[in-house]
Length: 307
Image: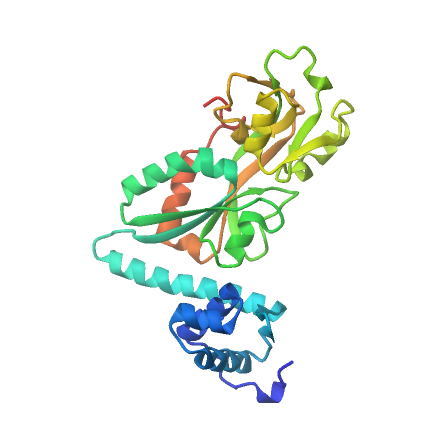
């Protein structure tokens, strides 16, 4: 640990110091960060040591294989990314103020079914209304920190995430519900006894949202097949290899070889919403995207899986 007596009384970090911290974390090494930034390794090392002295904490563990952030480093880098993003937003909004333009990159994190079926028409409208906005969409698995974690870490401006009582909006972030999508029983069309088929599941099935309902269904077996994503599940079901319980977005454009059966009034649902930072929630680009997302919001029953 850094000796508290050696901590600088002034802890102001310059933007270039923040960029170096972000680069070292991203590249997992001082040499690689130096190459990415066009600096010497000694300049990067000197800057990181200076930042550690100002903050009063060791930010990176140095080793033969490179540099890995400590717990303090993870926090510092996340804040650094968010601060740098606000500086970019400051410039973009100041430049666009004279003509009332909204411009610049807009980083969006979304899980697969949202990126495939919810975002495309939203982005069409967004770009038509604000040609200067440059959407950058990253597909992120909705497991662990998921898409909201990308916002918390400063890698995304807004995330489309599964939210609700089982998965609250992370502390320090803000957001809202866009739609509630129901789960349905999905099976090969025309099968005489689809409940006898093995269950096909995937990691992002979000069974934490449906655990109580799932536990009460004695007709649903343990998953005997697991795939990487919901698209693979749909393909397996379509080919007659099993049945599945899937949310509405994942069933958008499902082929005619798949039958979708409503699970009744007690069917499980999951809420899909947006998550951003309190600061970026007030930025023009994020506000414009939220307006378009809300305009595209489906009724409480969820989107039409055949749409």
